[in-house]
Amino acid sequence: MTSKIGFLKSNLQDTFPRGVRRVARAIVEIVNASSKNNQTLICLDDKKIPNSRPLSLSFDPLNDWLKSNPLTLPQKPGYPFSIAGLKKIVRMLIPPIFYPLIKTLIFILKTFILNLRNLISKTTKKIASNISSDIQLPKEIVALSELDAVIAFEPFNDIWMLPVENCKALVVGWFYDAVPKRIHEGENWNPDLFDTFVSLMALRANHIFCDSKSAECDLHYFFPASLGKTSVIHLGHDIERFEKRLSDSDATKILRDSGVNPLIPYFLFVGTVEPRKNITGILLAAQKLKQIKPDVVFQIVLIGQIHGQHEIRRMIKETNATLPVHVLEYLPDNQISTFMNRATGFVFPSKWEGFGIPNLEAMTSETIVITSELGPMPEVCGEHALYCDPYDHTSIAMQMLKCLEMPKEERAQRLKAAKLHASQYTWKKAAGEMMNTVNQLLEARKKA
Image (cartoon, rainbow, N blue to C red; front, side):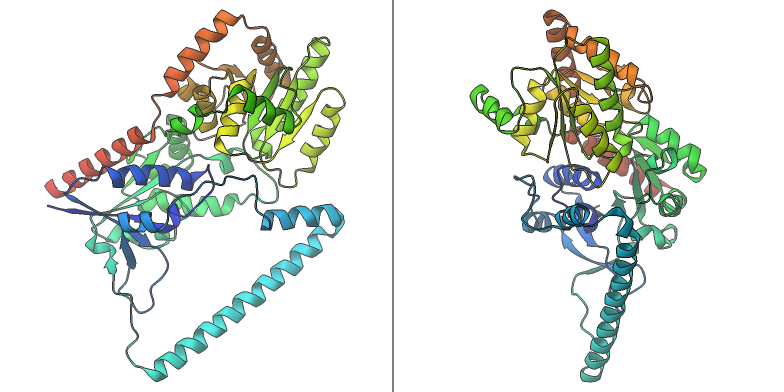
């Protein structure tokens, strides 16, 4: 008997190389490529369909949708014009004292545009209804009750606002981390929204996948409604992306063009530059290391986008007075893997994560990893990383020093073992475990 399994389009539409949607896309592409004949996979549009049956969605065959919407990772560090670029210009030209006023004006403008769009939409529908009494619905519509399973990769999907517990379909969610419950990230943080949606998912989902035992424990602790319906599936990483790197001559040129001296050891961070990633801890550790060992020469390289973060910018400027700190935008994959491969150490002392994919990418790129002893890091990295207390910059500095002074033989052994360890975390394995569990749950339902 054929099983109809739906995936939500909003989970798969993204060109950013990291994040939840990249995870979803990687898994779904493999599920689609290895789909068995007894499965019909479809891509559901989670936008509301006017005048459709309750809990109905339009859809495309998943294979067709993936072909017409290929995932293209950015090959350049930015675009000629973007919202992020506009924000950067505003921050450069306008003093922070005017930010509240600007936010208020933007909110008023957004509200006006939204109301205008609603008015236009209502007027258009009214005219259409006067012209024809039969409103044409999309041809390909499916009710959730007609599906065997729906897999939602994000807790913020609107599907959790629907009474899906009343459908016969198996509705499965994913939970990645409880960062908003663990850490307060400032004015852009919205823990109330997180609480609302994850509470609904914990209550309404038939099953929830967690990307680590650490994330599963957090889900059970903060959202007890999830108890008894979770399992752990470790994520993968793009091994082929991080095994590729430039030739020695090209790598040296890229480093020099970026302002990094290829003859001086450097510690690398890759990711979004935000408070929980603990860039401040890295910079304080670098300063501490310089105090402990004044004669040791090294650099810091930060690859990622800095959104505001005035304190981090101040710390970068302060550290730059003692040792070179290079801040680069996102780079193409082969350049990132080259930076990783040539780094003395990859420093990722995040205060909290759900899984920690960058550590695996660094291991595949053959780099010593220095990471946090909290959360899922020890679970994912095992004995193949150097661990530090992310809240103690002296602890980070000591591991950086250990990395600098590590004998060549020990380094070679560590790199080989770490790369082998990282090779176990693949998207194919994650996709297989997910679909095996879904099929087992479907079989159990049929028997019941």
